[in-house]
Amino acid sequence: MEQVRIFDTTLRDGEQSPGCSMNLREKIEVAKCLEKMHVDIIEAGFAIASPGDFESVKTIAETIKGCTIVSLARSTPKDIDTAWEAVKNAADPRIHVFIATSPLHMEYKLKKTPEEVLEQAGEMVAYAKKYCSNIEFSAEDATRSDPEFLKKVVERAIASGATTINIPDTVGYTTPEEMRELIADIKGNVRGAEKVIFSVHCHNDLGMATANALAGVLGGARQVECTVNGLGERAGNTSLEEIVMAIKTRQDLAELTTGIDTTQIHRASKTVYNIIGQTAPLNKPIVGKNAFAHESGIHQHGVLANKKTYEIMTPESVGIHANNMVLGKHSGRHAVGQRLEELGFTLTKEELDRCFDDFKSVCDKKKNITDADLEAIVNHNTNLLFEEETSGYKLDWFQMATSNFTTATCTVSLEKDGEKIEDVALGDGPIDAAYNAIDAIIKPSEHSFDIFNIHSISEGKDTLGDVTVKVNAYDRTFTGRGLSTDIMEASINAYLKALNRMIAYEKKYKGK
Ligand code: KIV
Ligand code: ZN
Image 1 (tube, rainbow, N blue to C red):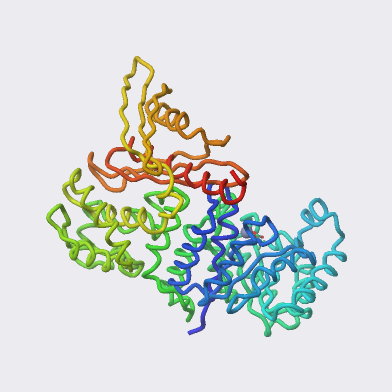
Image 2 (tube, rainbow, N blue to C red):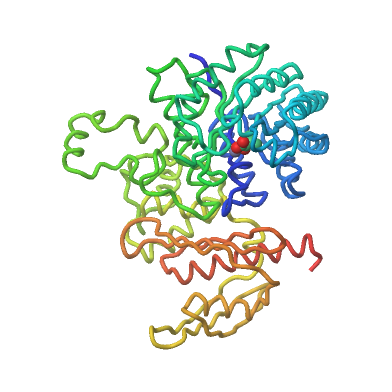
């Protein structure tokens, strides 16, 4: 079986899309998940984009040793110098150099002639090669480029030292048939093709990103660029879970495999959604709640007779396990720890202690604890629990008065360093009133409110509410999350955590 390399760009193409920004520790968390899943290559960021991007690419390069670590770079010496500085300590560094090759991009964006672009591509690949043996070259907007010109550029990049050639469908314009033919044409007709790996990078504007990536693979590509949950610019990129499971499920099409441990897919998807404060649409392939649910009588009947009637892959193969154990307030630490292990969590003793404490308080309010509840508890106690969230302001108590004919009022008492501070505020609804009271106590620096998301973790009126709040200041996003059966409490905790992070940042970088 030939291997298709999985190049994950969640931390670059995914992270650069609106609402998906992550801080350094969140990026490291995602990178660790990718490493655990055995992703071959991680594009950790675009090092020159900002000092924060540089720092995160560098930290990931120094932390993650099981994957190739890449930084993106435009075709300029400064971008390439910065990319190399960021990835040079990786176990296996790669520089990813790109330039646009379509008439539209060359004329209006780059303001260069095709000859100039050809020269620049060759010169900059050679420049990057001085630093690093592992060089990827991308011809941006390749699918809208003149195929003859594209082949010339690819040939020049190979001659200059590129080891991977990526053919992006930058605007999600192409079709599977075209993609397969394009890859086969380039692979069959450029000099030096046998020395390099061809790659595809497809966007999902017309909903064909996975189909196009698979077609590229059938045409001869042996690297696919993708993101967890299909995050990415506009409608996103090929989603990692879809392409990996497509290759695994349709081995009849070609003798291909990936190195991915597919049982990690569910966990990686949840981690990424948790960090960006979103949930999977119910019908999202592979990772949506309904992806393996059989609701209609006919389907249930078929599945009971033989699972394969309506199931082309098993939930277990992507890390979803049937819950045979009912957990509740009589369950002990051991039973909770064991279920968490079965769900694939490896927790430290301290993490398990914190989760068990939370589990017990949820049990006081909720009779049966589902796997989804347990996962939410763990996610709140591990991935996202950072020092600044716990060392800042904490909720002591709150009281609220609200109706549909008066202005909401909320009194909040917060605790910090053993001191309790109380204030009261009005608001347009209870959450606004609570947040105004918090602002009156903390007096945070100017910030804008980006996202307030609330979703229920499981079914029933007593479900846990999971709230995500994102505030923006200093060109950064500070995320906070709260989990409780009481959505007001969850909302207050989420806002406090976001503000605590902002305050910690101000202390560290702004001398406040
Ligand atoms: O979509 C695209 O063309 C890209 C390149 C930079 C690879 O993201
Ligand atoms: Zn892209």
